[in-house]
Amino acid sequence: NIHERIPDMAMGVDVMTGFPGEDNRAHRNSFSLIQALPVSYLHVFPFSPRPGTRAWDFKGRIDPETLKKRAAELRALGREKRRAFYEGCLGKRYAVLVEGADSDREGFMKGTSDNYLPVVFQGEETLKGKIIHVRMERALEDRMIGIAE
Image 1 (tube, one colour):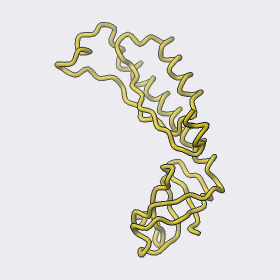
Image 2 (cartoon, helix red, strand yellow):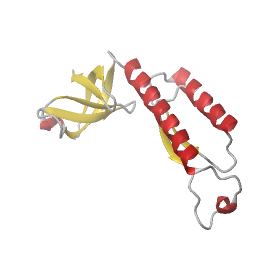
Image 3 (cartoon, rainbow, N blue to C red):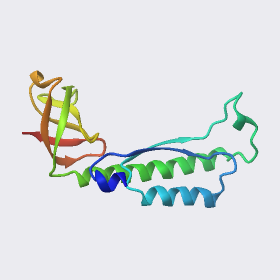
Image 4 (cartoon, rainbow, N blue to C red):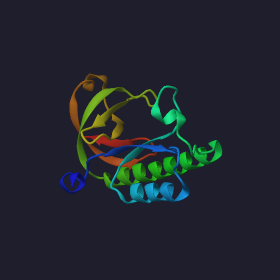
């Protein structure tokens, strides 16, 4: 429902994999569900037992190699979801809070859009702290390249 009302909204999901008792079927079901959802990014973390928690004594712990493989699969899915989200925002204009100079490119500023896109664009230091409009022109793996309008 949220995605239908606000289609350009970034929706993130925290995903734990390898909880004790998670068999291959449960993992595949989780993977398929996440794949079908209109989420924009994932925060994937493998289960790790903590002393003093109820799960510390749970039976059916997942072996480390399987745990590593499942986390890697989910992280790859997360990269695909983020890329699709970024590409869906190409050509669109968003309000961006300018956070400061981009350390990777001289003459470029960086910020975050109102729908949670990290973006870099050509601009002056005087824009820091302001909200400006930026048209998204190119999607990279971890950010967008935009043009300030």
